[in-house]
Length: 398
Image (tube, rainbow, N blue to C red; front, side):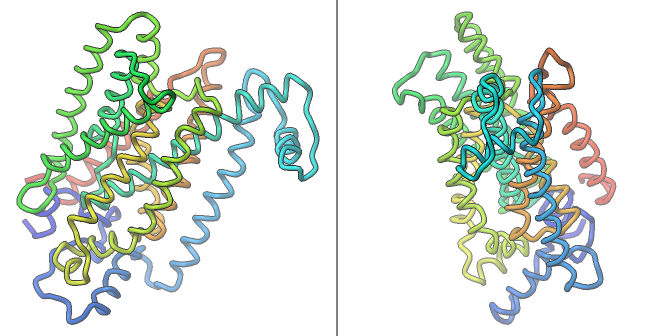
């Protein structure tokens, strides 16, 4: 087995979703001659796209980023206007412009009430939650050094849900409206620290160990949630069910304001670590040679991931696979460079969840599908395909 296969437990090396050997993270046997040469090598590996010309990379990534932004700008008003009470997209934009004092006009009373008190809080919350989960997934894959890491798969979402469910079942209100969010964040932080410690052995993180640890954590979290359900009353059981299935049905502006600080701080901090994640992709020894404190970097990013995931789970419940699927698709399209992958995953996650929430509201009208169930239905086959693809390319796990 090669060195890269050993480091990643037989899985696909980080930054090599396309299987290109030029983009793997094989441990080097010699120290780089100087920091500049190693940094150039990191850039070359971090921006590899499988094309013959590196000069086309900026155009491709810029076009992809622009496409994601435009798609999100189109999907948001479409989602805001679609539902049991249809509002034309032109009217949605007109009302938005009026609120921004840029012209436009006021809708009728029913339209204004539905748009501003029901639809827009839900769309904005979907964008914040999706961006948080997508960005957290990209960071997780960089921190653990493999493409199969995702907050939901390895149990962080379930751990954060335990904190939120426990706060509901025990009737905790010590921080007012922030109680559930803080409890979810604390439980998510403890979970990610436990997963990191248990899945790391001999200075490396193995894919199989990571997934098996996640299975154990999810099972334990499910047992705790079941225990809280056993002790909860009818009203609390209804709230707990919301966390288990994942939904944006209870979106309100106060909930948007509750998650906004966590999402903004996490999304603002994440791109600051892109360069160091690209260097870490070369291996721990070259990264240390360039002055990267690897353990400090990992601890900082674990805190960012816990912040993003805990806040998202606190307001939307458990929504899995967004952080796995979105970074992978972007990595396949534009390469593994984190300077694009991190903000691109945030944009892609926001777009994915806005579209998924629209589908959840409209596919089975007048009923509404749980959002977490819908993302799992589409994400699970993708994850299964990814596991088989990785195993086939590496010739097995052992």
